[in-house]
Image 1 (cartoon, rainbow, N blue to C red):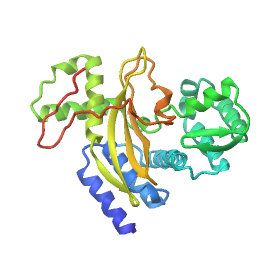
Image 2 (image 1 turned 180 degrees about the vertical axis):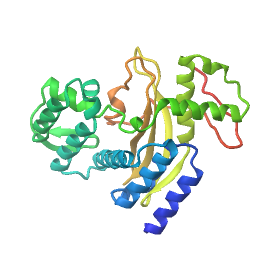
Image 3 (image 1 turned 90 degrees about the horizontal axis):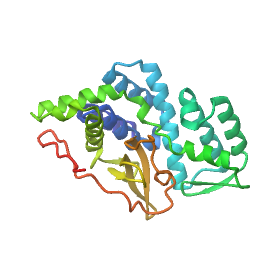
Image 4 (image 1 turned 30 degrees about the vertical axis):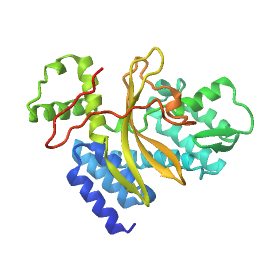
Length: 287
């Protein structure tokens, strides 16, 4: 794919996307093969910063880090990473979580960084998304690795209140009743469905791989519905699913670990019968 084609896709995403999430997903996936190029990262940062009036430098740095995280996950799916690259990817995920390390991983950043460096020296390979180690991990280290794979690495780019505003504007523009949004719990659920609907059905191309963005939900025992967006594509005849964006609705604020350790088919997922189009009607998923 030439720079001209990439720039054309970027411009199209800038003009046609309904919100920053769709911008980011379109760009990251459509340009994944060359996303490490500085000019692409700058364009993505400028786009998001302009959309939400944020600091361009900070956003660009965040996007660059996010690209590395997504490429690490894709490398695991494709089984193309060496043990050293897996160890480096785990270390990058810990560094990315530094501001929220205590909450996300249950330990200070310095301790998590030290533990993951120790764990990284044990990496021997991987089988799909599952990282393999030379020696069994103790329960603390295994929990740390699982926690790393259960964090939403894209959602922190966006402010929830700004999404509320976008959602309410979309409802009012279609003369929809917004009284349901007076309840914060209902608004949270509606917002989740709104974000999913903006993703669902989007078709893009990563190199010569066709990707379809899909929304789905999974209900672990004792929890309410957890919702995510993932890219589905075929690699050497094998269905692959790459996490793109997640909005949690479970009381604990997390999804079952099987969402990230994809050892089998996603037969517990269901596609959302939901759509918001320029000329369509907001159709809600019944509880």
